[in-house]
Length: 285
Length: 279
Ligand SMILES: [Zn+2]
Image (tube, rainbow over the protein chains, first blue to last red):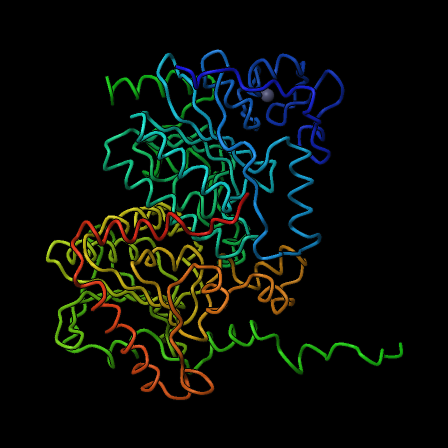
C-alpha cells in the first residue's frame, strides 16, 4: 500500500532538548540508573529502549522512539505533521504561548505533542498516535484533539485498529476551554469507532494524568500500562493539598491501578508489541 | 516611587470583568441546581445510587416534568450552609456520582426522555478514594456514552463549570451558559499557581483563561448565553429561573422533531468541529 513509506529521516534536524531530563542524568557514555544506581553504558540502555538491563526500571522514551519500538522496521507514514496551534486565546504566561510553541517545535522537531501515523505491527496495518511528553508536558490542545479525531476517522475508513500511546499531563492550559472540549470531541469520535466495532488499544505510559486519562486513555477496549507509570485524574500534589496528608506508597502507579481494577494489564515495554499483536489477533483474527 | 500619571488603577478597586464573573459564579447566595429544579420542574422524583458503590450527594438526579413533558434531570449540587457544603462535598462529585448520572441517562434513553443537565462544580473531587474508584474512567465513560444517547440532551452551566468534572455531564446537543457562569479547563487559582507561582494572582489568570460565557460563545464552544437579572442571579432567583425556562422550552422544541439518529449526529457534528484553531 502506497501510504506505507519510511518517514522522512530527521536525524540531522533533531537537536537534544536543552532542558530535557535525559541530559540531566547523562554524563558522556555512561549513565547512572535512577532505579538501581548502577552505572550503565548509555548505548546499552538506548538499545533496550530505556529499560534498565540491570533492574528493569522504565524511564521515558520520546514519541519517535515509541514508534520504532512498536512498528515493523520502525517504518511509518506520518499524518498532519505540520498541524500547529494558532494560539486562539493569545495566552501569555512566563512567555507568550506562540513563542513557547515555537521553542518547543524547534527543540522537538514536532509541531505539537503528538505524532499520528500509520504503520504495521507484526504485519497488521494500524493507525497509531504517540504522545510526546517533552512538548509542553505532552499536553492536549486543539492539535492533539484534531490529530486523534482524524486518526479515528482513518481507522474507520480503512477498517484498521487504533493504538494510542499516552504520555501527558492533561489538557493544555494555554488553550483554555478549547483544550477541555477536545476531551468531548475525542471521546465522541471513540464512540463511533466503538460502534464500528474496531479495536482501540490504549497504552498508558509515564505520566498519564488529567484530561487525557479522563477521556481517551481510559476508553480502550484494553487499557494497558507500562510498569511504574504515574496514572491518575488529579495530580498527586493537588490531592495532597486537598486532603492534607501524605499519599500512600505506590499511589497512582500502574500496579496500584491494576489492583483497583482500572487496567487490563501492566505490560513491560519490551513485551508491548507482542502483547498488542496478540490482542489484535484475538479481536480481528 | 512616584506613581506615573496614567498608571493602571489598583486591581482591588476595579476587578477585571472575568474575575467579577468568577466571583458572581461562586456568590454565596447564587442559586444552586436544586433552586432551579424546584422552580423549573414539577413532580421531581430523585433517583439514588450507582448500583455498585454508593450514592453521591454532589450529583442530584431524578425524573421530573418540564411544562408537563417527562424529562430526566441530572445536576451538580453545592451546599449553602457549612453542614450542607460538607454533605454535598462542596459540589465535587466522586466516581459514583458520575456513574449514577450515566445510569439515569441510560434510563432516559431507554424510555425516550430528554436529558437536562445542570453544571455547577469547582471540579471532580481530587482525593484518594476517588482515584481508587476510577475518577478518570468514570468521567471518560460519561463523555463517550453521552455522545451515544439517542435522546435530546440539554446542558446548562449555571455557575462554575469546573473542567472535566463539569464536562462529564456536558456533552449536549445544546450547551447553554448563564450570563455570569464560568467554564474553564482549570481554576483561576490553580492556573495562577502554575504560571505565576502565586495563587493570589487568580484575577490575572481568570482573564487569561477566557472562561466567561461571552468568551466561550465567541470561541464557538457553547450555543447560547442565558441572561440573568440585573446584578446577577442571586438578586432574583425566581427571575433567573424564568429566563432559563424560556431558553429551555425553545431549545427542547427545536430538538423534539429530530429522530434518534439525527440527535446523535447533530451532537457529534457540533463537538467534532469544536476548537478548530490550528493551521
Ligand atoms: Zn537499574
